[in-house]
Image 1 (cartoon, helix red, strand yellow):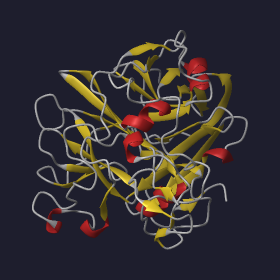
Image 2 (image 1 turned 180 degrees about the vertical axis):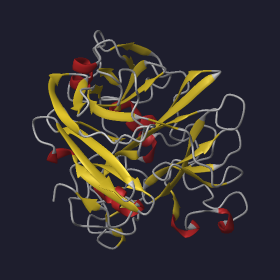
Image 3 (image 1 turned 30 degrees about the vertical axis):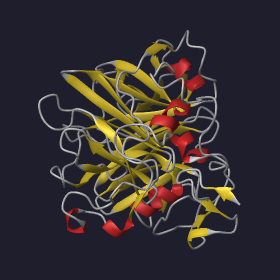
Length: 379
């Protein structure tokens, strides 16, 4: 008999929540270790999955919105992050994955071992806020611009899940946002999409090679006395095929926990396994529907990003990979050099920024559940 890591419920090792798609894991952590019991939003089991006017108010099936256990704000967002230079910080191991943004030309990194415990960081200045979120259950990280004057200044963890994925709430209107759909799915902001910021995940060692002066979030979070950032709060979750919550549909073409970077264009989507790029950088020119894009990645350095190949003047570039010149990762048929954030650093288009696509890294099971029947590149 074990306790479920997120809900704290007792179950045997053969139990399942929904068929073979959701297996009970042999985890010994109580819900309090995942942040439950703190914060001002109510305790475990107390989160109503149909707020704001009932089930008719949701853009996703309300019956599939589940209470994760810790309650609203039971997993506390970080509101005043502290940073140290990548060149001097000692608390981050070289192989730790970090979520990296470049905002107003400032590169910032948020280590997974902290994000596992907090899931959301509200960053930026009062008049120029932005937020980074990471869902440890689906392995997905995104970043959104805030709105200093309107309704999206900061976000919190609702305690609710859809397809095992984090549902965020904004603190100004209490509307609910699906992290992986990047969409307000309930409340006053229902139907709105956020202004999205490019995110690239990589190991800390790769970050130091690319951006040695990057700002890295430290463990001085205000919660460091009650969170053990050296301990992964979900036990065997990363190494076990099982899931903790219902997911529909389940696509078994790949290992459920394979890390993929996916891109979507209207009803179409495609994924690239991060372990498929190989030991040297690849730049793959591709198209899905009307979207011409380039997927650039490197398995050994553990990074991948996808950008629109079409520029504002209508030109569609063809890219080739660039080796051993980090943070530059590719060139094009016009002689430009591009970095990992899609900015031209040399050539006739120096300073040009490639357009962001609807893409990010996630576990395969999550991408396939939110965007069913995706194409698989390395298959």
